[in-house]
Amino acid sequence: MLKKKPLITGLAAVILTGTVFGAEAFSVSEPVHAAAASKITNPNQSAKELVNSLYQSAFKGEMPQDVKGLKINQSTKQDVYDKIGEPERKADGSNPFDLYSWNMGHPGYGFSYHKNGTISEIRYFGTGVERRFNLGSVTPDVLSKQIGSADKILAIPGTGETDYVYNTGHYELHFVIGSDQKADHVNLKAR
Image (cartoon, rainbow, N blue to C red; front, side, top):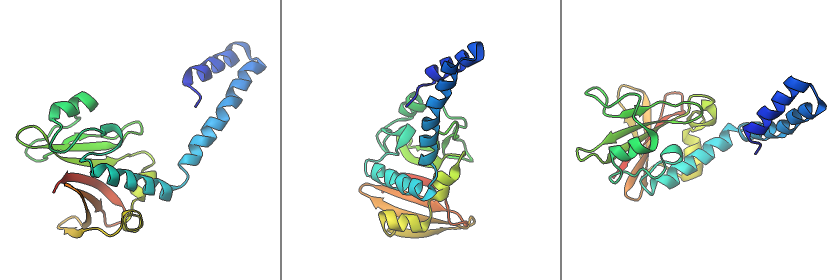
């Protein structure tokens, strides 16, 4: 993958000299952009990869990506703060989760803790930008095809959402599907 520094150097060369060498620096970047764009042109493939990643990680009591290695009933609040910083919104009487918003292509998360300070639940909110290539492309049909039938399906009163629960060893993975039949968020907790 082309690093930013040579591209910036190439851009500076074009601006300062207007030479053909500078123009070649731009042509080198075109395949990189084309390759990146081709990776995100299939929401269904992205959904499959995300579901599989979430499901496999759940067997270890963790979520993938930015918070990989933070485990239910083992990792502490301080472990979370050390790995991803302090939350934008801390848990309070109206919300039991420390909340981390999505930004710059990174997914959002929520962490709830036991009284002893270890993680009791991890919530995955996905990304906000290009959501259709993340949780917005996860549907009950994708879940069924990728990881099979849910062990439990629960109606969530008052929200119109449905909770598809998968047992993953000592943990439960909950895909919360909205009335639009797309995943709103995913919860992981001990069984």
